[in-house]
Length: 561
Image 1: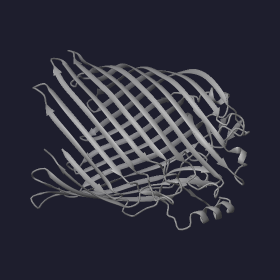
Image 2: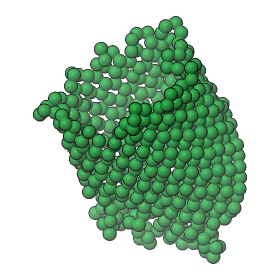
Image 3: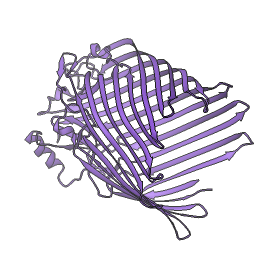
Image 4: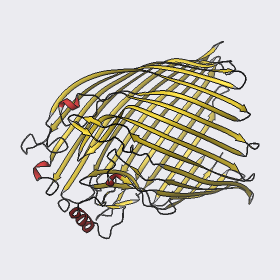
């Protein structure tokens, strides 16, 4: 398969996939993709592109069979060279009038995708990894080995305000690099497909080494902060993380229509860190610049911690009619504690967040009826978080804490074949996601109790229609999607400036494929040209926001061989 496409913002790209047999028992696959665009936003006044860039990725996979053995290996590589964010300030009714007037004056005549963010901002990422899967078909069960290694190099530069200094009295230049390597090994014993009881048991190991450095160059002026609060600070972190686990799960059918699933896992995690905070001004411009200052001070801390928890799964399912399945389940989940970077004091840097536990209760229905024409799935769920790990930016200081939280919700998904050619469908999700306690961070009490969890819209739904028709000697396909998302908050404060208003997105796609495998496709995204926020950072009552892409179109030509 080969594909070429071109679209809005001078976007061009290509994909190719080649599959080949290599003898009777071996096969190979090569997949390559490349994409580039000038960006849907721009820097003022240079008019250089933001939110664009170039991406490349490739994967080679090999598979071979030899007697009871099946070996699969793959190597992948990717390279991103992306432009920086186009961040802009968004005011609310709670923003100080002086800031509203100043921001409106600086941004007169500009739209939400024109920013003073530096055109030298960037996001670069280089990844490569390798995976080997070995399967041995024994007489009573199968043995599976999964081995994986991944290396990631990531760096970025971002302007967190999107306004010129000193016209606006704060400028934050954030630069970071992160190098990480990961290794994992898993061994499984798996039941045969025709086994009366379906089961799996195994052990797992994971290790990770991370070397991270983040530098903040801050310029400040009144009325936000005295000029002395600006400065040049760096946070360095090296971390070694490891995890060990043993697990097992079995699904037991009984009484013809029932299934009981029981699973358990024990996990042990170890964390080692070395955190260093530097005042690059060497104390010559007291106090230390934010975000380390004004109350913090340089430190050099080493710390370690270990965490372990059992987790489990219990599920009961019944199929009273063909293709109609009812189920109830209870799961316990676990996220190990960790040492956050960017702490203001050595005590904070050496104090880990507690482990997060999650109890998930769910009742559901999965069904396909009317001779396959109607699919209807529904689920009601309750999530109870114990020591939810919470992150909030207060001013320019990252505050970390643990809190209790609860989520109640339900979701419905359905698809109906109106005719042999046309299908309509949609989904709906309702959430009531709230903190059920305050949180403590150092000497501060964070008043979260009763507030809505971040990124948790109360309602969200999608509608779509798609169809396929034989036409013009080939096959015509078309699809239109509508997605609506309720308002939500980007951080736990629920402040007005981190609220993203409700919005809707419409996209459409149409293609025609000839009998010889040539396909021509056209597509459109955000056809309503909606202005919606993808990310918000709050400071001084202003939501410094990145907006999503505007309306865009494209065309693609492909050929299947």
